[in-house]
Length: 446
Image (tube, rainbow, N blue to C red; front, side, top):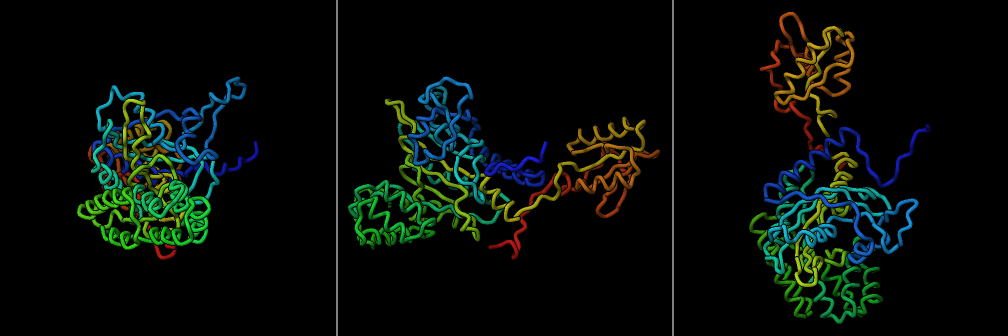
């Protein structure tokens, strides 16, 4: 068999990189659970028709069909492109068994058939939190989910993060107040401003949203507003646009930003160019940038949705925010911003004097494992020098030797060796398990 070529867009991390990913996942899960979110996992596929109703991503969906299936296209299934749409379906199916407001977190893979590039994959892991109500959902949850995610970022080994926040009602009301014939088209145009630039967006606003050239310039002025506090309200009012939906959006966004500024200053910033392209968002929307790596784009996003889940009698409004774990890994690992202290969980290698004595080495290893110390036994009864070199290549910091007096353990980094009892010896806390550290330097900073 020839050497297989990598498949673009489907990341497979090396062991040390996977340790970084596990650190991210463990941190995320710990913070989510501290805030009372329950874990869920939904199926990987949804009916294609259901997925295509939920956003402008119809060309990115992976369809799933059996090779010899006779199923009609209308029965096609597709891999979910995010975790919000399957979660909405899950709520509808299980509403009778859930207590509302329902708080869930979900860490799972998703798939999109887009062009792979730095930090953007076809198969990727997301970590979501959502809060869903029955018929109504208190507004304060729109602050809560953002601050929970801000807490996640502060606990992660990554550069500082800023959650950018806007309100779809504010944006739509502004566009309608200017006479837009299609507010949704205006939203989608503004959402592309970082990709295609202001001039191209101005053209889209005129051709797709029915705005005049002067109105398009006011939309660009709106998109340039960014504040850490509620001063954005005065700046929007100064543009001279009026609409009831704009008033409602300004009030809601001011409540989110003002509350967040009091509780966690700097964590949330009002940025009025944030639109989010998916159609199901109806209120507050979020995107997140890493400070110093803004050109990388958003690593975490979400928003309020009021009509995504409804059975015709009852509506289940929600708000959620999603961390792109694989996307974050793209910058942390791809830019060399983090490193693991070793590539294996093993803390101790127990040496083997000879194959007849392997059982004794296994006994020492079992005693250490019983006390929570990750331990391997040497694969061969080589000379001790070779066994030490094996541990060094693996990144294992300690080697345990058996002798007539009982045993000793050697720190192969310093060369220090001391007598030790497997029922009592404990490694330094920093060596017990691999540590993931931020290693940002001037060289890898953009």
